Image (cartoon, rainbow, N blue to C red):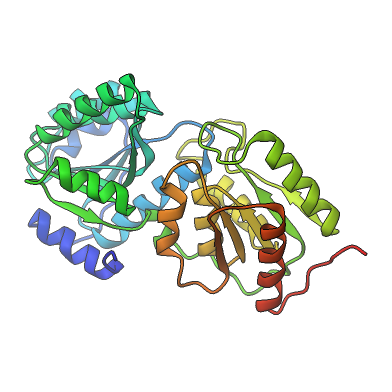
Length: 342
C-alpha cells in the first residue's frame, strides 16, 4: 500500500532535502520569469489542454497537494503545449532549489504518443533538475511500435540522474522497478484521491451511467447499448454522463467543470462506470458505485485504493444480470431505495 498524505509529504521533502518556511503563490507569465529566478519554484507541468476531466482533476489535485504541503515554493503551472515555448525561459530563470513535477495519469505509453513524447522532452530538457513523475499508469502495447516506444522511454527515463517515479498501480510499479533498479520508485494512489468533495446535503435519486466509448473500453458498442437499455428498463430515473465533455478545458476553467460534474454525481443513488476517474470521483464524493473493468489493468488495480469503501463494488466480468444485482445491493446497503419500474 502507499503512504498516507502526511507520510508522502515527509518522505518527498526528505527525498528533495528541502524544508518549507513561508507561503508564496504566483501564476506563470512570460514577463515575470526573470523575477522568478530569485524565488524557488515547483514547475508543475504536463497539464492537459483537452476535454478529459479525469486528467484535469489530476492536475487540480496535484496543484492543491503541492500548494498545501510545500508552501515555501511558487507552484508554476505549465500546460503540455506551453512547455515547449517556455522551457528555455524557465531554465534561464532557474533558482538553485527549483523542482519539476509532471502530473500523473494514464498516458505513459504508446497509446497517447504526443503526451509520452512531451514527457520525454521534459525529462531531457530539465535533466539537471530534481524531477518527480507523480502517480502514473504505464501501458505499452505488444506491437512493433509499442516495443519501439517502450525502449525509447526506458532509455530517456534512465538518463535522468534525479528522477523520482511514482506508480499508481502494481503493474506499473513492477515495470518501473524492473527497468529502473537504480532510481527511486514509489507506489502511490492517483492524486485525485487526495481530495474530499463529499457532502451530506445532497438528495440522491436514480442511476447514472458513465461508460467509455474510446480505445480503452472493455465493453463493445453493442454491449454498452444493451446495458444502457437494461438499466433504463429497470429504473425510472437513469442519466448518462461522461468525463470527456466535448469542449476544451484549461487550468482557468477546470474547477468550474469539475465542480459541475461532482455535483451531478452527488445527486445520484448509484453510478455505473468503467472509467478510472468515474470510480475515483465517486470515491471522493461518497457516491455508491458499480465499477466495471477496462481493457487493461488500470481500473481493476486502481480499485485497490478504494476497495475499503463499503459503497464501491467491482465487477471483473460485467454482464447485465451482475450489474443489476450490484446496483440493487448498493442501494439496499446504503439504505437508499431505487425507483424501480413495475
